[in-house]
Length: 405
Image (cartoon, rainbow, N blue to C red; front, side):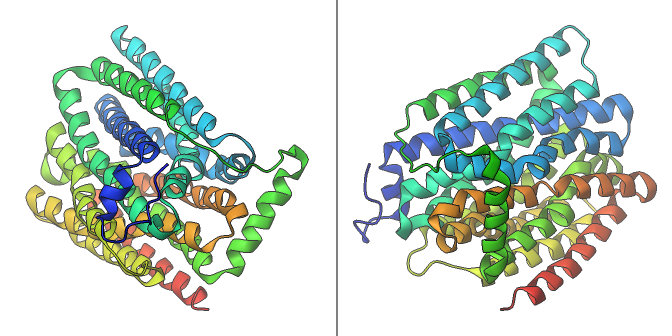
């Protein structure tokens, strides 16, 4: 394994990509995340075409985040004791099997929204391990001097997948259909599995004592709540996932009602925010000097919520796409520092557990998805997005007040 911090004159990205383990983990994350967003858009479009209900779409998409709320803290505790590489590979294998099952059902003409809900839950279980396994492994490979750069580069790649994935999903749905889309997803999940299998990885593991899992989680929560920076990460993660990112749950309805957009146009809407996040992620990955901290986390989160209000009332699809792209500047800062601050501030022996708590906070997103879906059905997508973003700004202000010291 290379020593990322050994040569300060080299580009941070070049140093990271020189490490085989980093390349494999980074590549596996890119493939897996791409197919996750393809699946989410295809399942949302299929459900909306079948039911005409934004709430039904929200329920299907909610299934991917629900395991994070229910299992996130437990996944973090298990990742301290079990082999993180094997946990990651099991999740990728499960997603491949699920995608193949959906493709078979679609080919037979038997696919129903509840099938997509179940498959989403399987994918959500794999997603639950993302922070505590693959993302932690990425940060560990990078070394302590380049944690934020490594996470930012990985986040930039994630933003790219969130941009390309929905575009590909809209294109697949409109051209080759559901069956082919899920077959492609299954194939790429298997490629990601092979990449992780070849990555060198070692870890110090705690002895697994099932009867102590609950006390281990409580201990991690106590550590996080006693530390202002970690407390802020958890609070802002809840705010962003409940009130900010929940807008993605009604994008098919928003695009169709507000702009009469076709599936490709809706894919453009879904890709806009990740495009802006890609640019900021690249800047953070190439940044040298002191690691950024809480100020940038708060600024990026608040800026995104403000832009979301403007995008909800955009008079045209191109303007909405441009505004969401600007909002992506804030989400990149949030995503990079969400993991980076934990890896820099949390005790090493508790990092996976605190990342698991962060995953639980991400899992609060389904509450926002359900709420915004119900609001969209009752009052329309524009008002639903506006109301959620404004409440999010108020909640963010409260979090900042509670974490000043």
